[in-house]
Image (cartoon, rainbow, N blue to C red):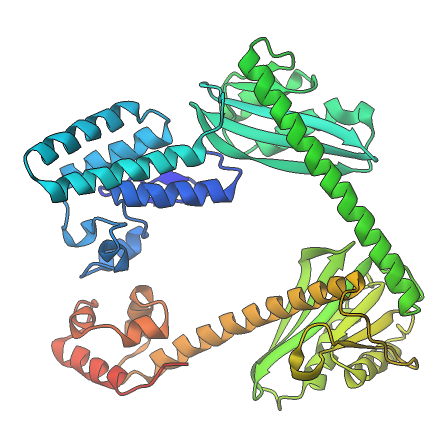
Length: 498
């Protein structure tokens, strides 16, 4: 999380590429804590959340102002000094030093109430409530008051699990666990050392690390070289507070490891059952799911979503956009398969296609043409009215199979299919939305490429452009009153509702 260096700073989530003058807080390892803290700070101090570009182009308050999450500095609803005071209050929350601020606000609320200024007193009461909520979100019992990161390691079933918990000035920035399969217990110290070097390569380290196991002292030199700071490595906690947080981290790591191993065992059992049920030639470790999306052939896209041991492999998944097609699912599927296997020598154990016997036949034909008949193919066809639980599964040269609605294998295959469907639908919607914006801008009367670009910088989607007021269009650089009226009348004549 960063606080920008603008005259009216904004509070934004950012992982890297920090600019000069920005105040950085983190790392927040738990996104729920990050987003909840931001929401309460917006409510309490009404800082803006928009980018500098949006801020500079606004002519009237946005929705955040009307729901009292922003003070609308973009249209001078608040002075620079008042906004600066709100920023200082937010900084105290993020630094864990809000006690003095709360006492001051409480006194102001009492004075306002005594003077019968009940609206002001109610506003101060609400601010105190949001500040308390922000503190509660970040609070944990017996949190260390200094900057310290706790890393606990546990080993079992050939897997090492690291639990990382971050604390800054008494604030809990959340935790995250990391798994290292195919390791041994004797490698824990080495894993710890390498993890710290890599994780804190671009992240400023704390003053102290509290570790469950000792690690190489070379880590200190590495971090000093990267960040010009001195850190302390502690593997034997000397205070009760440090012993408690380390024990808590180790307990979390143990639970995470148990869940990880249990999930792996379940996936293995389901894969074994899948091989036996559908008579697959190989144990299905690598599965690729194929789906497509289009509306009457427009903005057609096909997708391949890869899974390994039941886990989605985002970097290996692919989307193929084909523009306008005749609306034939088989054409999309055939083209996607040819593109996928013509230039790639890594093959899945199983292809799961969203469709019935026709789709299975199409896949089998393409694989035969490419001499890849050894890859198993399974089709999953939706039941009547697309109701989950009534799917039928198809194999080439074998009878169709239906699984019981309560069968865990059915739920597993539904999850893979639904993930692929979601992945393709989201890609289709992005393409469709982009095409709608492009088409709308090209339709505007009297607007050339330069003015189109200026409009795109201000209005990001068709709805916001269509809802733009005449004053908004007049404020666009290079727009005369006559041109703004012409564009405004044209937009009002359109129907962009889905």
